[in-house]
Length: 71
Image (cartoon, rainbow, N blue to C red; front, side, top):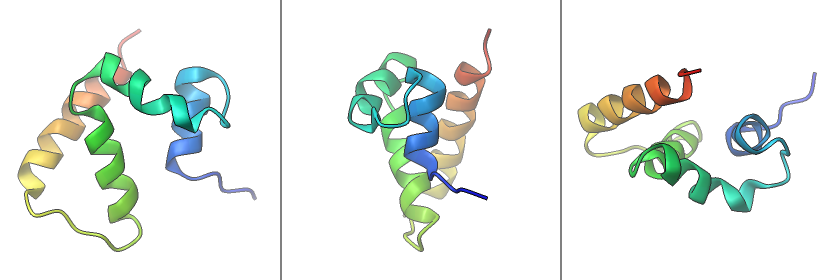
């Protein structure tokens, strides 16, 4: 099994190419002004990093998921 990581997986889903990680922040900003921060926090948090305002991050993540799940 191959693991790609969060950012390459999002680049594949949103941009059609997992190598376009550098274009991901601009694409995420189209979805939501806080989307890039949510992805960065999720990626850092999965590696042991922590955020000081977890309730805000959770709400922003919920909003991002809602936008991503729209047809």
